[in-house]
Image 1 (cartoon, rainbow, N blue to C red):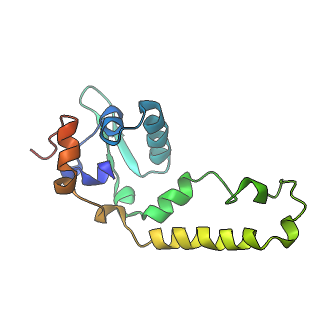
Image 2 (cartoon, one colour):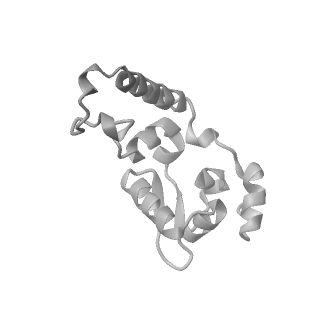
Length: 135
């Protein structure tokens, strides 16, 4: 969302993003690497480098991205096909949770990254970390 708010394809460093969302640098760095491998961000190397959304990143939906980032295949550990729950074949909760998860993603499929809050809404966050994108 932070990259979506930066106008004109300006670059943000991973540290800028980590600071703006209050998340450890290492976590953000791993997420950025995954987003890059998916073609959702472009990275410019060098002293004045950083990251920005690619065209694919701007047109992707939140649902599409979360599906790519979600490494779990079952809503709960007990529901994994390798689980040892004796009730798994008769469990009504498993199917209900699977439907709920798909409904969650389907709803997020209606939210396009480019439609997320812009730089005006993010201005207080950028100011907090000393950024003035677009100025």
